[in-house]
Length: 106
Figure (tube, rainbow, N blue to C red):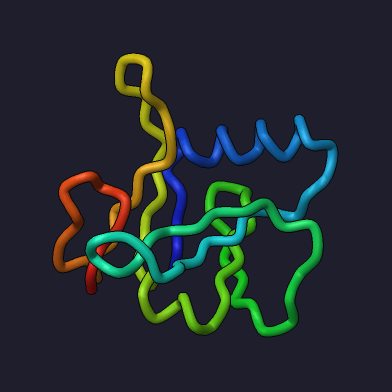
C-alpha cells in the first residue's frame, strides 16, 4: 500500500489539472547517491501493464514491481518549509538516509 497525505493529494491533483492530462502519479526508486536508492516521481499518461495501482485521497498511484518491495507502506507528503517546498517520503522500510537527504537505504 502506498498513500498520500491530504496536502500531497491536493498538489498531485493541481499538477494533473495544470497539465491537462494524466492518470496519476508513478512512484519508484532508482539507484543513486550516497546511500544507494532515491525516490522517483513522474506523472502517468499511459499505464504499464505490470504496474501495481493504488488509490489514495482520490489519486491513483502506480508502482512498478521492482520498486514495490522498497516502497511498500510509503506515505508521500507535501511540505512547505520557508522557501523550500516539495514531496517528503515517510517509508517504514528505510534504515537510514544520507546526510543531504537525497538517497536512502533499506
